[in-house]
Image (cartoon, rainbow, N blue to C red; front, side):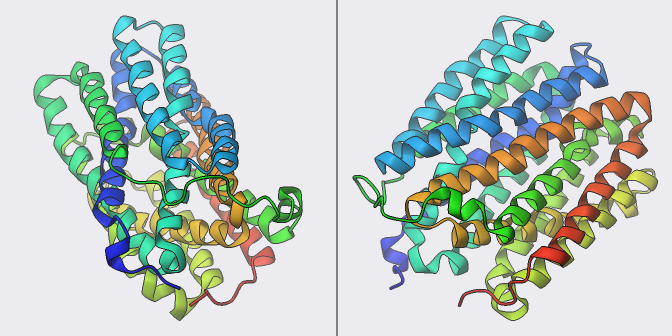
Length: 388
C-alpha cells in the first residue's frame, strides 16, 4: 500500500539531496581548475580526480554491507557525512601531489558511502510510490547543483580559485547537518531469507545493466574532469562556464519532473535506448564543435538524457532487481561500478588522452563507450513496460 504524502519526510529528504549535490556543483566544475592552479598537469589532474571516483568502488559496498545487516542506514549516512568533513579539512594542510591524493582518498572513502545508503533510505520511505515520487525528491539535488555552480563561478572569478576549498568545506558541513533531521524508516535487522546475492548477480539482465552503467559513467569522464578546463581554454568566461553547467542540470530537472509520466507511457527499454543514443550524440558535439556556443547549449540540454533519464531508469531497475536486504547492496553496486569504476577509468583515460592526443579524442573515446552501452542495451535489456 502506498505511503501518503504526510507520512513521507519530503522536505527533509529533499534537503539532503540539495546540499549533497550543491557540494558536487562546487566540486565537479571547479576542482580541476583548482588543481590546475596548483601547477598540476592534465595527467596528474586526471589521476587525482580518478582517486575521488575510485573510492566508490570499495566504500559503498563496505558501508552497504553494514547498513543491510544492521538496518540503520541513516546512522551510516550521518557518520560518513561527519567523517568526510573531518577528512576534507586536511586539504588546508598541504598542496603536494601525494598529500592531496591522501586527503582525497580518505575524504571520498567516507563521502562516497553516504549517497547510496541515502538513496536506499529514500526509496524505503517512499515504499510503493518509489517509481512515481523518487524523481520529485531527487530533483532538489539538481536545484542544489544549479545554485552552487551559478554562485561559485562568479565568486571564484571575483575572489580567486583559492577560495574553493573553504566553500566546499562549508557545503560538506551542511550535508552532515541535513542528515541529522532525516529519520530512519525502520529499526532493527532486515529479513535474511531472500535469495543469495550471487543469484541476483548471475542474471544476464543484471550483468548487462551494471556493464551499461559502467560504460555510461566512463563516457562522462572527460566531462566531469576537464569540461571546465576545455571551455576555459576555448575562451569561455567562468561565468559562462557556470551557466552552461547549470543549463545541463536544468535540463536534468526537467527530465526528473516528467519521468513519472514517461515510465508508464514508453517503458524502461525505450527510454534507456534513447538516453544512450543521445549520450553518444552529446559527446560527438562536444568533441567537434566546442567553439560554437549554440552547439554547446544544445549539448548541455542533452544532459536531460545522458544523466537525468538514464539515472532514473538505472535507479528504478536496481530497485527492481535488488530487493529486501539486498537494496543497500544494489545501490552500492550501482554507485561503485558506475560512478566508482566507470568514473575512475573515465578520469584516467581522459587525462592521458588529453595530454597525448588532445581534447577532441577524449570525447570521441567517450562517444565510443556510450555507443557500446547502447549496443549492449539493444541486445540484452528487454523489459518493455514499467511497473505501475
